Image (cartoon, rainbow, N blue to C red; front, side, top):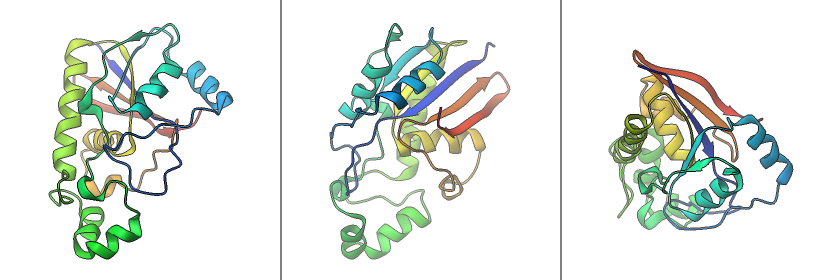
Length: 194
């Protein structure tokens, strides 16, 4: 089996001061210098795909220069925060103190009202990733996604508990590279800032 290299890139910043999951808010892509460095770091012959949320699609547009663009994939969306989407962290902690604590301190099956659990999000993003791997074995694939979506795949590659993956930062416009070999995953970089 050929090695497939996944170049996970977190979308540009939103400057939101509230939880942003499936709510469609734009990214600030005005930092042309950072985008140019990122573009130079990514392989020229890579395929590029993004979630279908505008902050990811706009970031993919900024990086698509000459790369083959795959259709947007809703399976690559951010965690679905349900009723918490658009609320501040403090507001969520005040209205759902036990659930919000459990959601972040012991992620897994805890679910925000009308949202999804970590395990549900991880299964969704893993299914989308597996589809990409099966269709494009041996390629470089740039995946423009979100903090939570990227962390689900870092967790998958590490084989760790969900709570353990939260030790890693995933900054906006950073690169997390995960290579898929016949024998499993190789973590090449997490949160690399070119």
